[in-house]
Image (cartoon, helix red, strand yellow):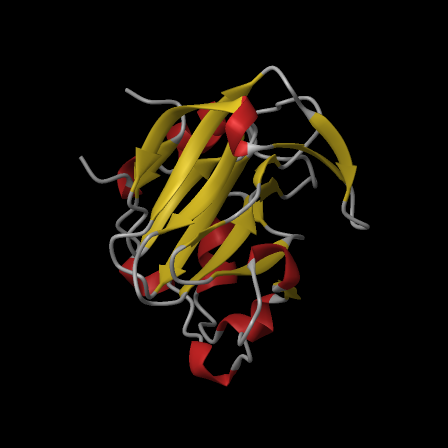
Amino acid sequence: MNRYHRFLDIRDYIPNIDTSKYQTEGMRWPEFHKQLQFKDLGNDKILPWLNSLGFTSHWIEFFYTPPHDDGVIHSDNVYYADWAKLIFQFGAKGSTMRWWTSNEIINHDTGQGKILISKPENSTLQYEVEIGTSSLVNVGPLHSSHNDTNQPRFAITLALFHLDKKRVLWEDALEILSEYIEK
């Protein structure tokens, strides 16, 4: 199996966000980036469910990819650690998430931390999948959003942490979330 993505069956734990209230006119992926809290997700079942699994999140992000555009190719850290995130997509059915390799990497400071980035012309596509409503993703490898639809694509990501505040790695997330992974 791939080391990038798994579909999840977690229909009771999906955020309830009204994406129409966000102004996105003229914005591209880097310009629309919001930090959220659990209270912003509109579903009070999410945190207790995560806690029951020994998880929490201290890093909840909200992204937008305009129609016919791509997000920046990046890793969520500077050492390719296989960090696990939950991702929830709203709109743009048919858009995808892509994972890449590259020999030309730039160390980039986002203001919230450092990440690795690369340009498409310097990268090789390794894997691509339509995320659907909810998925588990590995954000250590280089990755990006791809929206080739006529609709806006919104995504909420929850970086998974153990209750002791250590990041949840991909293999641990696969094991702990195994009953929720679609077969």
